[in-house]
Length: 180
Length: 246
Image (tube, rainbow over all chains, first blue to last red; front, side):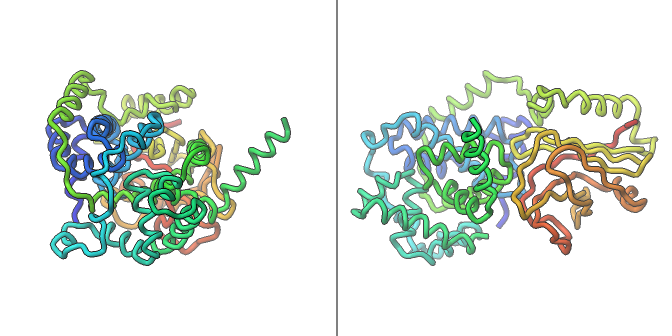
């Protein structure tokens, strides 16, 4: 599948503000969705999205098309921005807006229509994750999308902390050969 | 004091175990590394380029998960904030501003600038056959890390790594010349992790240089002589340009 955003990101790197605006319009809904899950309040999510896109503008010239897709590069930049913010705030539990929970969007029952829009990369990743036990897969996805700590996952899933840590560690160990 | 140094050395050695740092890299990329372990790992990534490259690769894998999310439109205020920021910071100092990097602050940049200036002053690529080429190799974070010179006078390619690149025990750095139009790169040889490496080049290799677009240094398993293109991560890369060197 062609990387439809790579050209816009490369134009952004040359200072093309129109290309950057188009890139924002096309990708911000997915990236906002990521920020909402990570930050769990709309205000914080929008802060992170804004700061993240400013970083994308400033760092667009470090994107290398051959090494990954534009959307994944941008989501890494913005997610790292969100994680930095969470680290500095240390208040996320108190501010949680519960509507941003769950993993229905990543369920194994994705409709064929939805599957068509997905890249081979994410299909490959999901195939790797599907080789794990459902609880392990859930822990890894919750950790990625929501930035949950091990303790938060233990509370959420009603399992001992040690079990959660072992699930994640072994799960990631098991999918490593599949990912490379 | 020596205990502290020993601990630091042991810690560094631990991270040269590929099994261990691959596992740590995937944990970091998936977001499951936390607290002090995460901070320690981030500090190590700043000095161990291979670690950074492995993490980048895993981050790329996991970042595809964004595709599964349902859309959520942000308010118009977000773009307004972004737009006002980029307008306020105009005129853009775009970009590829390698000359502003720590490479120059470290004093290595003068040599590079001398090459660029002499290339501009002395060489007209339309009329003169190049007698040398040069490239500044940068890391992914756009920090200039190495200088490469290729001279016809002694048929030598020299790579000068300014800041040591940490490489695991069973691996080595390999230099590649990639053609402008794509295709199979020329494998030039193994590069030292720090300081200068001189490689003698053949007449044919010299002639091929005019078609080379960029140079890259990848990390490869030791004695893996069969590879014809980079199989490991690309740590440094840079555009090759004609130059006039003494």
